[in-house]
Length: 265
Picture 1 (cartoon, rainbow, N blue to C red):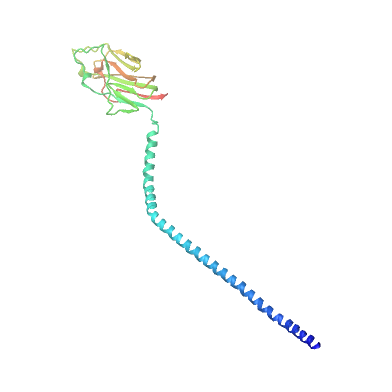
Picture 2: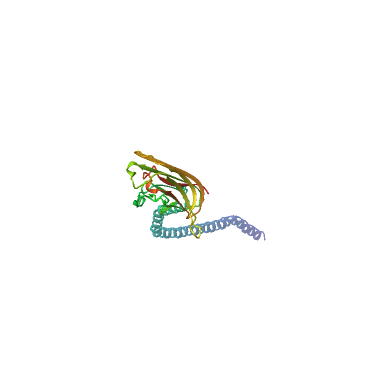
């Protein structure tokens, strides 16, 4: 009986001694399993990163190729825009210049013209004949925002104008003749206005000046008339100058001239 108890004791003692030896074996297996799992996860992570990198590399390569294909068109478009920019700016500048209002003041100044019809057609000359003076718009004259036709200055822009005229009459010794009676000559100047709104054009006398002279029979005689006034004019109105005894007019530009300029609206 004692022997059986002793053997039971020995088995229990041996089991107790062997139990700690088994425990380390189980822990090593557990650690190996953990390390293996971590290694597999690491490999999967590396593989995933490599796959993502390869995918991105391929995408970037496609983007580069697409950019390379589009860049010539973009460059051509840029060059086109650069080339068109100065032309567009030039067109816009011309358009602004065209649309810009002409700020010049309407004005005209014309010297006398010397046509042959101012010479007396017969002797003695007709003392009562009134003649419209022709003016030279080409030589020595100027027209700004106004026109000239058949002795008349024509208005383009309505407004209030100052109109002026100067005429000089001269009598020289070579004019003296038994056929001409120069006594009590009437030398008059008339500034006239034609309204385009009238159904029947009837000139209106704006100013009249002159006198009746007795010429002295000397080498040279001259008599000048100068006058001016303001008048309201509308578009297409005409102004002109009439004189008596036009055959005696001085043909120098500084002696006989006609003009106008706008003062206000």
